Length: 137
Image (cartoon, rainbow, N blue to C red; front, side):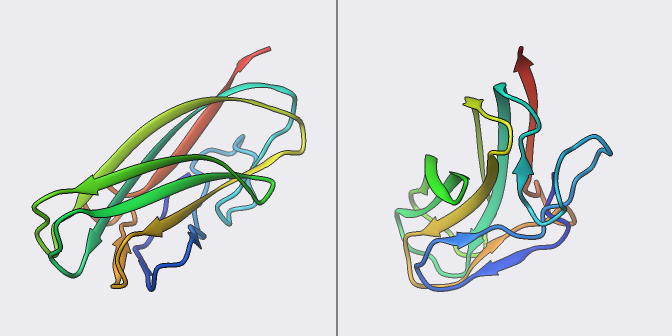
């Protein structure tokens, strides 16, 4: 799935990344940014989040959470030292999860400073994507 347009995240609350759209017809999603598991098994996911802060503060971080059925499952934190305002930062991470049929996965973002953070869509450098596939059984 990919984020078609950039999204502004305000404040310091954990915010869902909505609007991710599926790129392939066999992707089990309702086009709102969630992934619904069709069958039990092990799944591999790759996440790319491209973001930018509007202010220059050393140690700015952006945490990406994988949520399962609305509850915290995994997190990845990206921190930028010697941060330059309006400079895009890309976070890449992968994970393998054991999931059950009917589980619903989604992404949420939490940033460390109380200023606007832009999560880039595909029209911007890098973009934001959430992709995966079943690996077993």
